[in-house]
Image (cartoon, rainbow, N blue to C red; front, top):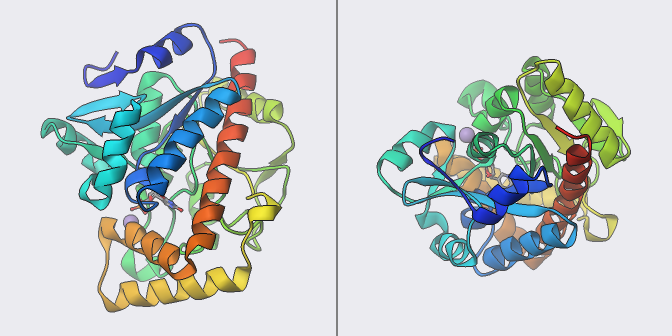
Length: 306
Ligand code: PSU
Ligand code: MN
């Protein structure tokens, strides 16, 4: 095992027995939602995973240790500290570990730690991607490179329209990362069930997704997979409301010269503020929905036996 990695005993037992484990990220806790809803949601998502027959492994860096599986107290600490916790993408991992510091892991860093621990399924809200204006800014999330390299299936509700979804799909295609739609041909756009773009493959069951994961990795293909799960209709938002909030947030980011790793957290926080409680409620609903699908996939994958 990696000398910097700690796996929670419950997660370790589940992995040793070939049981279903679902990884969860922590940037969504510290940087993706306000306190205290962030902590409540993280704990509810863990409970949802358990209720659906899998073991949750929330991932973070705690005092320089890569952690697969957090205690409730550790989740509370990350959530309460919010933006004061270092947002850790793959670039930052070695430095935060070397400093013995805490870090909230993005999709990229969570995938890497999940893979080190032997976890193949990961649920979150939305992935990072190619930002609008990337032809000038070069702002492309390291999540996409990680998806190209690391064998973990990431269950998400697509990506927020703070990103350029067309370029994100192009980038993923170039990097050989399949985008699967769960029971849909449409690429969802986080708060809405459709984005106007299509996924690469529609699969209608967790079992079919598990079989595709198994085949991809048995072929020796190195990367992961995006499993796009549309937000339940009852919680979807009106496109115009989201588009206006995103446009304003982007304008403010550009006026304030926000760039680099600050960009995504700034945009997430502003979209949350501008749309108020509605978008937060939708966000929570879709994360729970993704956790349920990730459980079904993890159970199906475990059932394939390896
Ligand atoms: N998109 C969301 N919610 C999030 C994130 C993105 O709708 O919480 C977080 C995830 O942790 C993702 C990260 O991995 O932001 C991407 O940041 P960046 O664009 O700096 O790579
Ligand atoms: Mn970026």
